[in-house]
Length: 115
Image (cartoon, rainbow, N blue to C red):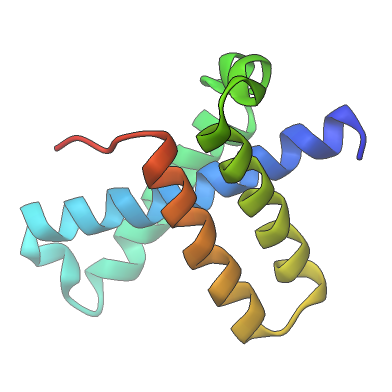
């Protein structure tokens, strides 16, 4: 795997996790955004902001890339993120869902979400 592929896989994984976390927090904080018309609109806006922040900038991925190999939790997250990326592109929908759940679990062990 090349450096570019490695960073792209980590960015994609960060985007998937961030989108779910931000939308869950947004709907929990402002239930109005769970309504059928507003939820897709909010998801579109959140996706655009996160894509810009994660995919088009180096937001935090420099330190993640350089420090990610220093501990077992980080290694497990990287493995799970790469497995998710592969399952999403080559596997079935069920395999992708299972790989995503594994990746989110590994990420939670690697980085603590705070409210």
